[in-house]
Image (tube, rainbow, N blue to C red):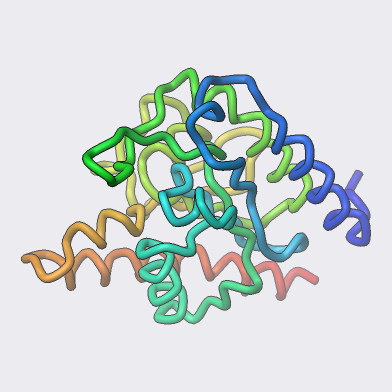
Length: 209
């Protein structure tokens, strides 16, 4: 039975409050705060990244740093309104290691991804998107399993029982690392093309109403 539309925003707010106190893995000890998902509670497209970065950890909002700006630009190029999407991460706390005065991103371990999956699954179950865009390998593996390979499966629609169709693509931070380097333009083109594949689900959803 479908969850009533009017209840989705309040359900997400309750989940946000619950997640703020999550202690199911050690990442909370060194993070500023839990960074929960944000966006349209009735979104037909959900974007799932790996984890919050330094800027997101400090501010408490997903994809607002340099990688977020790349994502915003690519969504615009693909004709997608970010305000009409729901944006979250597979892991809700920032995992980092010190490098001088800087806090550098560190890839979450599988046990940390597993501990956080409850929140992602409950977000998916509440929003009920038509398509999920997995931004990077960690996001894709959290939903498709450890056998997923971004090099082989990027841009190809993936299906798993109990989930909407998934479109895996690069994480925007990958494009950030390519800035002013060979391959930047091609990677951006591929990233936008993958987002356009996901955008077709929005058109299909409208035609099915």
